[in-house]
Length: 360
Image (tube, rainbow, N blue to C red; front, side, top):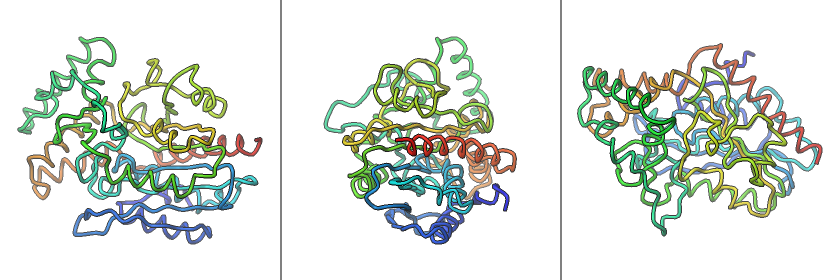
């Protein structure tokens, strides 16, 4: 079996492969139904697999589909981990928790966002407190999210964004676009007005499965930033932070959004720090494993077009189908060489976590 066979053609195929792989491995499966519908009325769910002692003190957690359409990548790794037999090689007193398609709506509809247009990885904020401000987004909102989308508009706005990226200090324009915003429900990187279904479901999963864990290693799979096929290990915080230092003992090459070493700009409302607080009894090492796909400008263009399509366009039009095809390519390179690179880096990353847990 080739490792490219672990990866799916769409959300439904990914879910079927995951459920079958879980059964073959003898893991326990639980389903969390999403209230929204997929294309053609397809039922949507987050599916969770547990393998190992229920009272294990050490747990490796993998998450796919935080950004919906990015679920092809992490979901493929999760299926492969079972089907390759690697899941059976757990150290003593160690369990595996695989969270498949935590944002099933985005996965099914080839979007990064949820049914509420919420970016799950900007949604982990305290909504009872003043929300983070993003003055750059407000300043450039009409440029980032135009109300009309033609070839000319796409070309001209992309050129202006690239001019600003070059003219402004590093990461200023990228942060304006992607850091997170809480004022424009139809805009890009919207963090929401309340906890999303995906966030609440993840909190339920943590409460149900991780309350007794003493050590947790979490890998959240992402795509869209960095060199094609390379998996950057991004950790919240930076040198001196307890969780950062703990994570660095497992993965020495981690980067940080805080110190400029990452391909990502600093972000607000991300999941890893918040999930860490849900398991405050445990030592916690968490990374986003981010794989490159297309050049950053092309990925941003795909996001902007998809955002316009769902706010103003027609998904069934020729333009809509073209935009969706571009969005898929921006977050899933359906090519054997890319899948091999994803799998190899994932194996290296998860094996490092398990080796660390085995030595504890």
